[in-house]
Image (tube, rainbow, N blue to C red; front, side, top):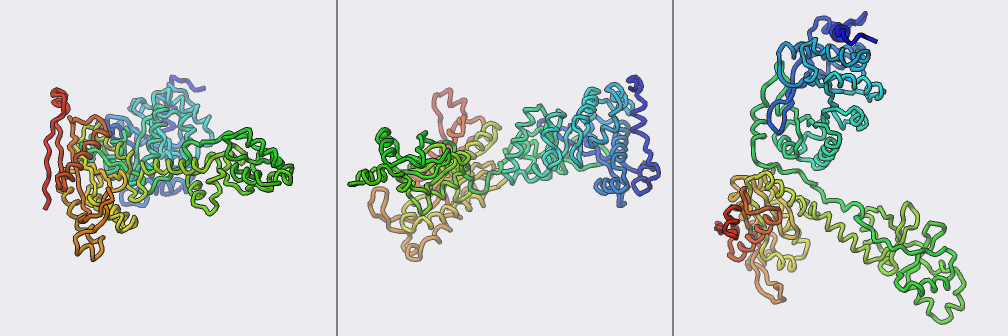
Length: 626
């Protein structure tokens, strides 16, 4: 065992490179010490300050071995991969010390190279070696970059514990790319985990990546780990990551690698971090799948053996008046189903009991009943509802679990379960327009309120839409709804304005754009002009259609047109929660229709003054339209 009081061996191992008889371009660069460390900032989203820098190696400028990918490829060809990694660590430590730079330094190294460097030493020697380079151990973060899976995790963890005891930290790099494992995260207990740029790049446009990152944030909270989002290259992605609450970010948008560390992020990134506007989170742009059944209403009905007689089944139905059917099983496998009504009608016929009473009932059973697994997808149930065989409506169906009989279900339960599941799915994304539904709308309002953002909530609705739908049919009515959706979206700034579809012809727009009123005017004018073209020539000439109103009275209706009610919900606000905002906007929309004004703006007094007076005073404006 080495003497812990002697720090020189580790420093010597790190500082001296001996390629032996190996020759090649990279060997020469290492001998000549021609490699240079560059530094890329890692920025705190909470403070906007530079938290740390990652050291990245560069070769001579304008040479084939300039960029890291070329250098690592040469290291593999020349059999110098571990020597190259160690040399990069030494260069970065020496340069960081010479610059007397503040903050932490992230150093890339593989688990294999780390074990080679520190496997022979205890924590005091390892810590002294870092101090030999003039860098406090507490400011060093070893970033584990596995180009292959860690083959000996227990051996690596043993060495890592000594490194951690010396005061240094660990980070896992590129988590999620298939090489870094959750097991390594759990056993190493790193202080930082860098999320692979696949999940963070264009996160403002990909709802699935957003969901994945949220899940990783929950894991990080469980393990007490700080996440670093890599690959941030746009203002939109940075805004989403900021509002998600990701602690640290890194990427070209915040600062490119440079020979010298920097004191702050690039100006355009700082502007995004200081911007009070809330990001518009991406939502699923396809109709949400209803997924699996939320709950199965399984009737725990005892089955009968497949060789049961008709008299046995009649007695069972007589004993259980509420039983709508009986399943026949062979062991624990359901093979047939007998519906109560059909069976008893047949059993009551003259001479049936005498002729068939003691014969097996399976001769009169449905041997191809509907079977539904308790974990079935709702889409599978929809296929049952639309199938040609509709016997399940009377006799019900059989629930199975892993192929074994589980119980019975009824036809009306099946219809109800599918309907409820589809309604729940539509609350997340409207199946016609693919716009966010009620749940994402409420979530976005809550985020705006929590951030104290300046925003306007607009409720959009159509006049005389029902007569149009009744007159031309639902398919033409769907065209009107899709026209309205596209009109609202095209007039919004997708980076700060949110468009949601409540259902039917009801939409919600949450504006952070300062020119929101002009955008509303554009929406009204554009939609009203385009909607006229969805009428036939005869209706256009007449200026509308004759149709029945809600009371069944036939009368004339003009062209369907857009009405919008708007409320200012900026802090301090009279609105405490999303339902308050949405309800106020809906009332403003109703007022717009009453006043025959395309846009009606309701401006409530601040919450404090409303509380003092005991009621909310409003300054309302009916916005005229050209």
